[in-house]
Image (cartoon, rainbow, N blue to C red; front, side, top):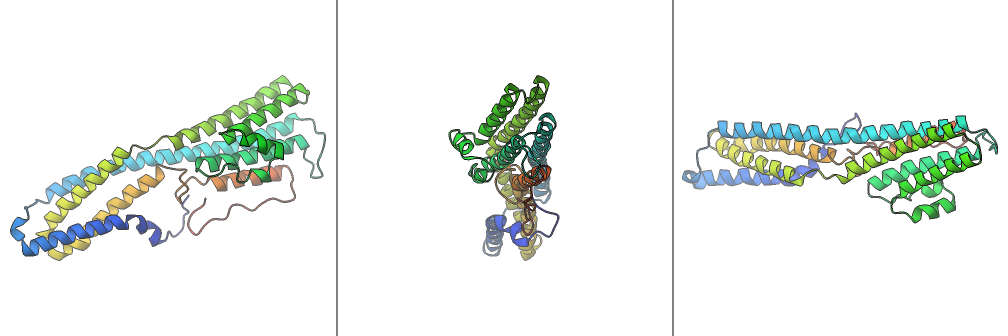
Length: 303
């Protein structure tokens, strides 16, 4: 997630350099044609590229709006995960009759649940980004639960299954009553729904044909604008065309990044930082002596 700070110019411009180079070559080609073969250039009235530019602006505005909706939905999903993770541990703490207290004061059963929930948050974020879902699991899970996770394709779902089995065992051992079991199961259902929503966003591809159509229109606009300007302002057409084209390409690239909120880019939903926040909250709730610091921000973004 980009921070409210100075974003390096290199990050803004690096991904559109090939497009800017193409625009420069197009502009230079028309300047050469005008110089050597001026009769070959058709006369393009400026209202034509103006009409195309307005149409492209509407298309880009629609794409940016749709892309931001996807990004914001992903952020809301992870906001719900924060809330439900806290709720799960707070509910379990209020329902369990404390026994097997740790030196910190937390119940062993409660700590097992809380650590597994922390592992679930890290695992889900890494799975959505296409990274190893088991990367941080060994820090929070016992060996037999790690072995259980390895047997499943969907690692976060395996952890929710272990949550469900633990709650079932509590009920059978009469550590909680039927109403309390239902409340804990309802929280697990909401966590499973949030996981499914994140997977749906990640697995639904934004139509590539729409991106290609916008690119085609942008280049058509550039060619017509270059033909219109080359006859009116001469060599000033090159910097003017570049500045206009770069604006359109930056808008298109911004929309493309926002439409994939789990692609491990600076514009992503900061799932690692959110998982670290959950870890801090739950460890403080357990009164752990060693609580990590919040995830450090990079120079201009948070992962």
